[in-house]
Amino acid sequence: MSRATEESRVRDHASMVRAKNAGPFRLTLDVFCKDDASYARVRDGIATEAVAAIFKVGPDYVTRHELPTLAVLKFSLPRPGVQGARGDRDMHGAQFAVLLGELVLKAG
Image (cartoon, rainbow, N blue to C red):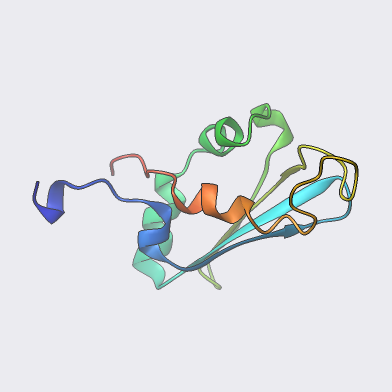
């Protein structure tokens, strides 16, 4: 398969994908894009519904923020459980970034 036909993932266009707590009940995921072209590709290639699906929440619970002057795309969504509760396997929410980074962008 040639490079032109390979799948493009969020991580391919980002200098950093980061996840962190936004309080004990929510997560914020940030995609810092490499440049304006990468930002446009990520912005147009990620549907909010796709983010909701990988984190198993309804699309109405995902808030999307587009920051073109910074080439950053942000999502805020409910944590799967309360931070620090029994069974919380990621106290800081950082591991959720990997899931977003691996998301395949829709063709565009």
